[in-house]
Length: 177
Image 1 (tube, rainbow, N blue to C red):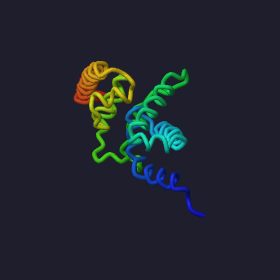
Image 2: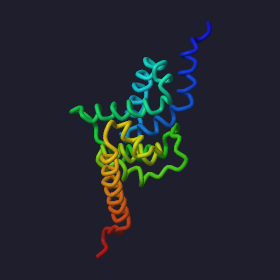
Image 3: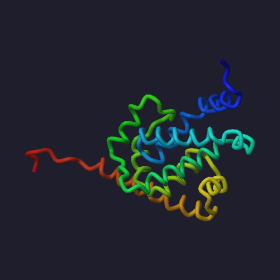
Image 4: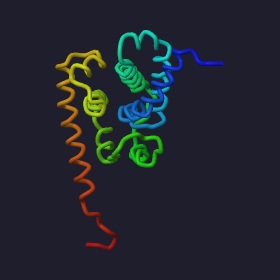
């Protein structure tokens, strides 16, 4: 029994893009398990609209918007889980990450940036979207994207400086005076 062409096209697209979607979702939420859930839900929504989305152009923009919306919905839930240092440490050991160079320090700092600003930074610099494309995904103005990018970069710089200062401090050993 052969697959329907629509299903074959969808499966081919998913195989090509799933790893990048997972990494994007992880950078948004900081949790591999939640990233998997977000991607699975996004792909389910994409599948139900596959014909219309493909006819309208590149499905990546549609899936990015779904991922951002799903992450926003998750953050609004009262029982959401905060990201821990242990979650960040799993990035190095996770077997399915597609990032070429994993920088735990940068990711840990990124996860301290307020969520809306982090979303803009991920779309602008990991997904390599323009200001206008990011604004379209988030359904906001280019001016808002620019200000969120500026604030997010400053928050990221501050977090990196703080992390570096904390790790550069010598620790006192017991018995030292």
